[in-house]
Length: 74
Picture 1 (spheres, one colour):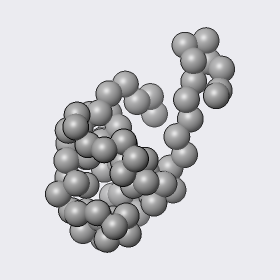
Picture 2 (cartoon, rainbow, N blue to C red):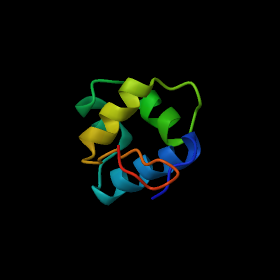
Picture 3 (cartoon, rainbow, N blue to C red):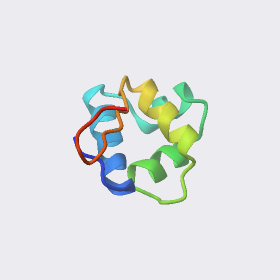
């Protein structure tokens, strides 16, 4: 999935959370954050904390890969 902004990142988080049949509350507990943060993250709120967002992605088993516009993995 190509992530181009907070909305698409949030949509990916929501998709993978639902694939795991987990609630926002369950993911929030696992990530040691509030359910409101998970909701804000899934809705693409632009001011969510990056470190927490990456932690949630990790909790869901997602790997974040950065590619240059030439397609090189970093």
